[in-house]
Image (cartoon, rainbow, N blue to C red; front, side, top):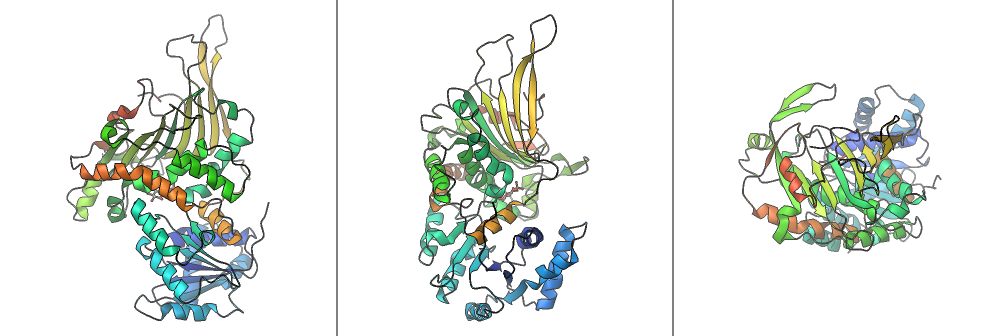
Length: 501
Ligand code: BG6
C-alpha cells in the first residue's frame, strides 16, 4: 500500500555528518530511484561550514558513488541532485535561524510542509527546536511541521523528561518523531506480523509453553572511533535501553486492536510498563557486564585480525580506567498473565565471535522424553544478517531403533528479488508520510529509561575491575549466573550444533 506524501521539504541538520553521508543522502536517493519521493520534494542540507551549492552537489555525488558502486541511472541522478540545496547555519551567527527562514520562504523552490531531521549532537536537540520555534518555523497553521529526533532521547529518565519538557513547549506530540532505527528493519517489523497473521503461534505464545526468550545483538565490531561517546554510554544504554527493549516489546506485547500508530504504540507502552523493575539489591543474578580484552576477530573476508582490548583503546585517548561495559546481559520478567515466570534474557556485546541479531524462543520440555538430553524446541526469528524464521523440532531417526534427532525448518524471509530497504529509508518515508507507528512515543522512552537507570547507577558506582572477555570469543562463562535454571544456555547464531557451552 503506497501512501500519499504531500509536497514537502526535508531540512537535514548535520548534513555533513557521518550518518547523513553514509545513510541519509544515499537513502533519499534510493527512495527517489524507487519513485517514492513526490516530484516537488526538496532537500535543504544544513551545516555549520560555508559551502557553495555546486560544491555541495559534487559532494553528494561522491556520497552516492561511494554507496552505489555499480553505478546508477543518470536521469534519476539529475532529478535527485536538482532537489538538493545547502544552507550554512553558522553557530556564531545570532541571526542564523532568521536567515534559514528567509531561505525557506522561497515558495517557488521549497514546498512549505517542513520535516526537520536533527542529526546533531544530542545536547543541541532542544536548542534547535527552540530556535526553529523562535522564528516561526514550527508553526502549523498553514502547513505541517515535523521534527525527527535522533537517538539518544536523553541519557537517563530525568534528562529524557527534561528534553521532553523543553521541546513540548514548542511542539505537539504529533509533531515529534523519536527515532529508533531498529524499528525500520523489515525483519523486526515482521515479528508482529509473524505472531498475528498466523493462527499457529498465538496459542503457544505464553508461559504455558515457553521456557524462556533470548533477545541478542552481538557484533564483531569494537567501539571504533567512538571511544569517548561509548565510554560515557556503555552497552546497556547504547543498545538495550533502546533497540533491544523495543524488540522485546514487539515479541511480547498483546495484539493491537488494529495497525493504527496509536494502537501499536499503546500495546508497546503497556508491555514496557509491565516489565518488573530489576532488583538492584540482587543485581548479580539479574545483570552481568564485561569488557572486551585484546583478541582476534573474524573480519569480512573470513580472515582473522588481532585487535586491542577496550581499556587499551581508551588508554590511547588518555583515559586510564573505566568500568563501562561492552557486554551487557539482563534477565527480565514481565508482570502479566501471559508471561508470568518466563525469563527474558536480553544481551548485547561488541567484539564477539560473530555478528548476529535475533530472537530465540525455547519451548518447555515435550510430553515425551525418549533420551535424557533430548533437545527442547527452539523458534528463532533472526533479524540480521540473515532474515529468517527457523523452527527446531525432534523427529524419529528412520530405522529399527527408537531414537530422535533435531530437524530444522529454516525459512528465509527474503526472496531473491525482494526490495532491500535500509531502516533509515523506511523511517524517512514514514516521516514524510506523517506515519509515526515506527517512532517512539515519549511513554516508551520513559519506561525504557526507568527500567535501565537503576542498573546504570549501580554499575557506575561499582568501581571494581570489570570482567574481561577475549575479543572474538563467545559469552563469558560467568554471565550464565543470570540464568534461572541450570539447563539454560546462550543460543548463538541460527546454526544448530555447538550451541551448548
Ligand atoms: C547504534 C549503536 O544505535 O546501533 C551502535 O549506537 C550499534 O553501537 C548500532 O553498533 C547497531 O545497529 P545495526 O543496525 O548495525 O545493528
